[in-house]
Image (tube, rainbow, N blue to C red):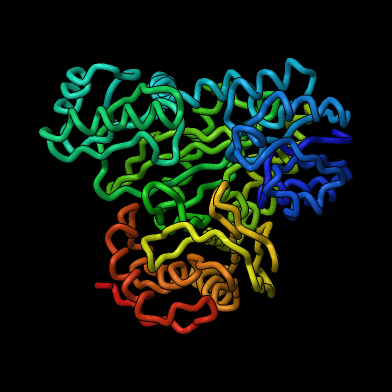
Length: 471
């Protein structure tokens, strides 16, 4: 096992990695920008060093600085966390060439899955169902339009590189195709330096289901069940849970078997997640693979009882998986809410600033993953997430009740957060019944925001109006 590692990230995920390292006896080296000098991951790590100014491209994305520091501090491996360089093929490749272990998949796997159109084609050849659409990436509008007419509108135009909803446009009418195709291509080029896009059929009311996998360097692959990620806004996940309330045992087994086949085809190693869209008839289609630890990994940990960061370390160190597929047994239910520094009353506008009071929830079966504290300043330079609240229960209703109680207890003063929004969603009859799709938030957003606006604009308000299925 590694004696010392560098964590090429910040905030909540850096804190998360440090906690597992401390339990495993691994020395940690943290990096920080000038804006993060007083950050929690800096205080918690065994060593911490400034690598540049606040701008990410001059600090957390500065590969020469990261590798020079890893060498100067005698680290053996680098954990990329998620975001920043975690799915950067060049970073993984240069890390290995410089003699460090990259705690993640091979550069080859990152490259294949990072090109969404390439991943899609590979899955199709491997017998994994994919959404009808183009073969490979497109640069010609006319060719894209021809394919869109073949599969039928509405369609999605999606960036071949990257993710997170960038470089993606929904085209509902033929007359809009050319302009939206060009908009997607332009945004993809700006966001990822790659203007290639592809076209696929758009499902009207899908569920977003993902399967967590672990794959070692000895050819062993296991699937650690699914996560339900359908509560999204603008393709950004807001609430996740495990297991999914809609999957039958037969469908769950089929999706996990398909995922394992896909992982073998990719020759994948380490932790990863294969994401699918599920239609109302129980048909599922490959969407993408995330070649890193996921933000929502805690719900899997709570339900299956395995530390996924520890498994990442053990796989990267060359150990063989000791978990067998028959050991993977779901126990209870877990739900996670991502708490962002955003003003819901003002269309989710960013709400950076100094936290004047921070009182996280506690009690049995409640977990809070965060890197903020009273006096901490949420910077406008980075992601707006300030905490993840995870609640476990023996069944879905009890997990949701515990989440509602935890959100009621959670107090953050000084900035606006999405806590009131999450409480309304957790209480909503459609969400409670499991009767929802990725359209849940767009369908109910206006009513949710109006309900929040009707309350006093204070972070300390805990009483919420009742929500109905119509609202």
